[in-house]
Image 1: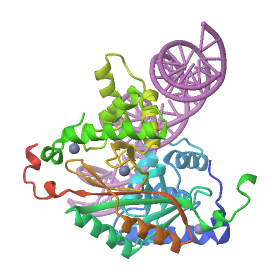
Image 2: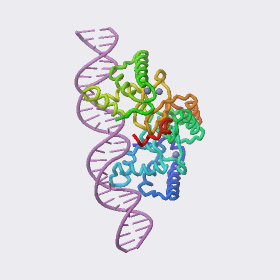
Image 3: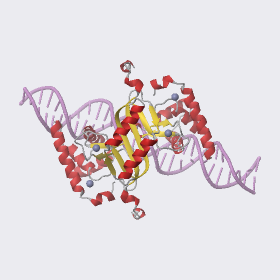
Image 4: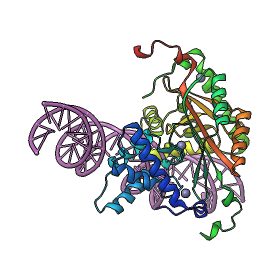
Length: 166
Length: 166
DNA sequence: AGCCAAAAGGTTATAGTGTAACATATTGGT
DNA sequence: ACCAATATGTTACACTATAACCTTTTGGCT
Ligand SMILES: [Zn+2]
Ligand SMILES: [Zn+2]
Ligand SMILES: [Zn+2]
Ligand SMILES: [Zn+2]
């Protein structure tokens, strides 16, 4: 269903996963909300790669991991919780979900999405956020949230002659 | 299915519609592509308001206008054409479509979407576009397109005490 | 421990969005 | 008139998400 991305081969991704889980446990503890085993399992599956994954892909992964079949509401409820706590983000242009690398404070983030390797990188550029707010303010618009998703090619895939060999 | 937005009551919206149709005819003529009656009808329906409309809403509107029932591929193909020619845009966060007020050149645009009256206003701020490209370039990312959708309250709805009277 | 209310998860069915595949009709050039 | 290309009609289906209702688990209370 998904293939490990090139960008993931250049770092120890196990650290990404374990860091995310540790941070999530601490955050939920601090907030007095419950990171149940199902929710943690979904979070870990989301973090299996840096590629956004669809809810049904996650459902299949859950099913394979659990012998018993899982129905859509189960995974969507877990995703809703993780979204609510800022542990994951939703990529609107892909109908997919990705782990947040810095969930400790809720933030407005931006994504660079590679069309080749499918990896999505989260940015949180304060200057850019300010610029967005300024532009909205010029129109007298009060901002509650925004979604910025930039599609293109990551550095690795730009200079990659192997595209057609996959 | 949709209700006329407050923001639309302050201008002669007939001009918006006719301008869009005239511009579309001219553009398609120049480009040698065919603005068929179906495509023009869908464009006109999209322009019935400044609120983004879903494909199935448009399908129902087409059905009511045409006595005969319309199937999804019919409206999706028309929408695909209009998107391809830059005559409409898709709002990812709403799964909806809206007419482009300046289709003569293909552009990257931004949307201010009011959560109250549902009106979406298109901005095309060159400075902001530049800023986005710069931020991406800092990460060595080459941009092919982007989607920026800002949600909040438009000026009219911020100061509007009538919200609960609707 | 036993009880209870609240929260979480299971189950079934269905709503909403979008496309594949193939048949028919229309267009525009020869 | 003929033909190839484009556009539209039609059926069926895939993918994404939620409603409604029931059962289980959790954690505070007596
Ligand atoms: Zn990693
Ligand atoms: Zn984040
Ligand atoms: Zn108007
Ligand atoms: Zn536009």
